[in-house]
Length: 297
Image (cartoon, rainbow, N blue to C red; front, side):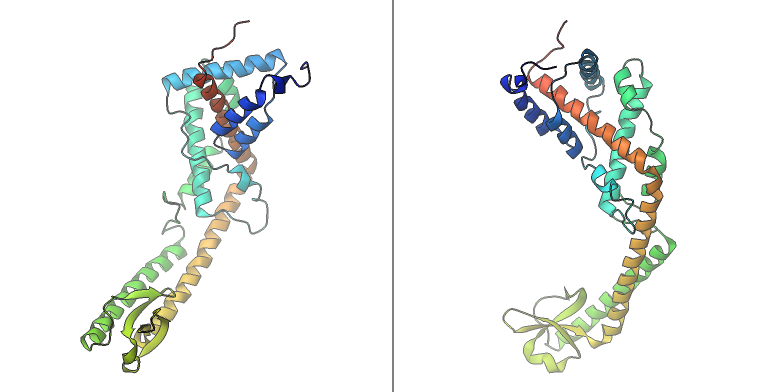
């Protein structure tokens, strides 16, 4: 027990909590720091001191071991995984992958030297979920958090067709632009985009000289942005294909989320271990900042 009851306040323990929390990178580890209280049981104190000793040795041998690739707390998203029709977005899936990779890096180093780091080895018990979850995500998500063009055969076919149609529309629009420019109908600017469609800037007085639909008007009213009639049907088809690809994207992400669902518990536990490691690392930084050493009893 603590005596007196307000001992933590008297010795300024809240300041220590605040300093640790400021160095934590995950929301869960920040909460651990804010909830952290003085330890009164010898076995708990000894374990914490051992972990700090092991952290110092790890940093001395592997300086970048706790430099994680991702600091998003994936446990905040995992709690929604059981909701019907919920799915992870691309950036969330990439964040999960980065956490898995960081976990695997620490796990590998620790378990190659279990005798040297028994406390951390007890913390990083299993990496069974890392490879299957990583493989599932890597199959679908690019390194820039976009969906892979071949995420599914349908998505790949739609992407190829969209790219082909976009080129055709762009070429035809530029051809019409050159024709109208030669006739003196266009403004000085080039082909541009309005409402996700390629349009040609036309001087307002020549509106009736061209065949097309006005998509926008300049602030002065002197320039009209016209979609040529000749490419209207292609643009409508492109719009439909965009919508179809969005539906296929959502279908892919829902399936990937469903594939990750059986690993819900393991991913939660893995994130908890990463948060605990981050909390320990934050404490080690405080110790290093104050040039603190392990007390001798």
